[in-house]
Length: 232
Image (cartoon, rainbow, N blue to C red; front, side, top):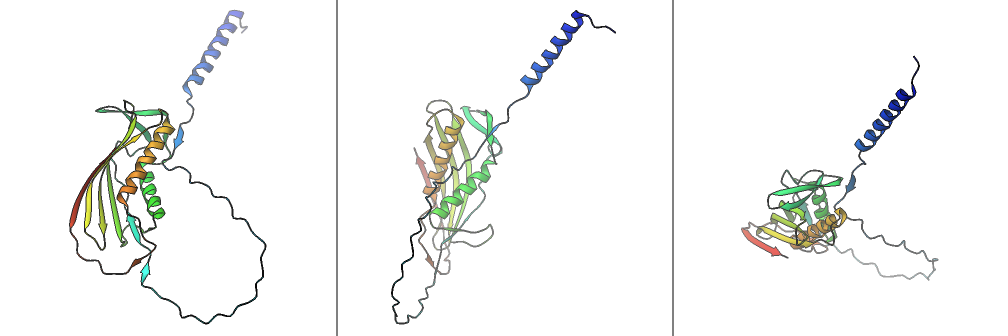
């Protein structure tokens, strides 16, 4: 069957329309976000030529033994509301409304990212992290109630958390903390950077600095102490 010029033109237009529809329907992949930024990179150490020194004989010293060890901490998995513990980056746009940021999503669930950040900050303060179920000098439990950037003025991240801090040698502490962290701009990466800063401030407030080591001792019985904090 011979195709007329009119039929050929219609077929070409139909093919062009299908290509346009396919192009419009294909969405670019979402950009993945992580809560923790990369640590500062240190320069490699410079190697110097070895220098030979005359041997010196010193009197033998008896080994020194101390009953000390590194302070340990057990940071439990951070609890979040179900709507927050997802892969969507949510912003608060009203008193009862949140909105997902288009074209962006978390590379992992927010509870996983927050737990790892708290454990990293604990290690930076001198603690040795131990697994769940093991005894530790410090036991931290955090329940997040709100943790999202808000787009209405003032542009900030609101972090509200309930927490418990259990010690081996001190009374248990518990309380609530409300943090306001300013956002430098309105992009998704700037909002996530402010969320990281807010989470870091929470870790600083909750975790006392650990000494290089602690003395072994029996844990006394303690009582609960309530603490509330509101930080702008």
